[in-house]
Image (cartoon, rainbow, N blue to C red; front, side):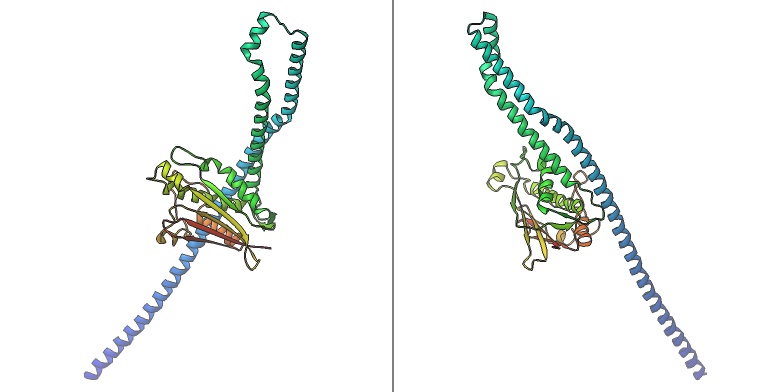
Length: 324
């Protein structure tokens, strides 16, 4: 009887041991499947972001290119007619001079008209006005060229480009965000450009990264201005410093975007490159997310994108891309 009872216990113990092994195996299998599923989800998220990024770049590139060409047509027309217009004006002034020499004492109606239109002032100011128009046309032309440089649609082809041109075109596009408004003075852009070679890159995508980092810096500065008066901000003006150089080992191009805003907390710093992390409100979404910016730098260019920050003392985003 006792032996039978012991045998039953042994059988049950053996059964329990076997069941435990199977349970452990099942748990291990479930954990493995959970990890595989998580990897699949991350890969799907990554692909979705790449598609969104590609669509954004393509759409924005086409839009900006179209705007640039639309601007260029009337600007070219006006620029081509400024000099002839100035020649016509000078010819008319010359004709007036001839009349005044031939008829130094015009009748009362002509005298009245001359005084009423202030002919002497027009003679002095009109050439200045034409010159100002010419200067503004050159400015519009620069904006048009900046748009073209910014919007280069490079697809999957590496192109040789001037990094500084890309940064300058991005600053030009964002100029209205930098200008003074009722809440703050103008945001100063300080350029510390080093001697850089022509870089093999995807220019359109790289310009998107520059835009995203500049917009983040502007947003951070605006946020740091909350509660400060216009005068207080003037005493410690908003500033974004852009520095470019070749790394000490000559193997990388280094690009730094540094602001003197409120900085980033350690908690946020740990998350800003995570998938779907959002640092902006629904009404303020300009440029790509930082995760996409990092993807462009890391996966498309084989570089790195890092952030150095001290809360309350600004933030620096540091790009390194291979120099080849």
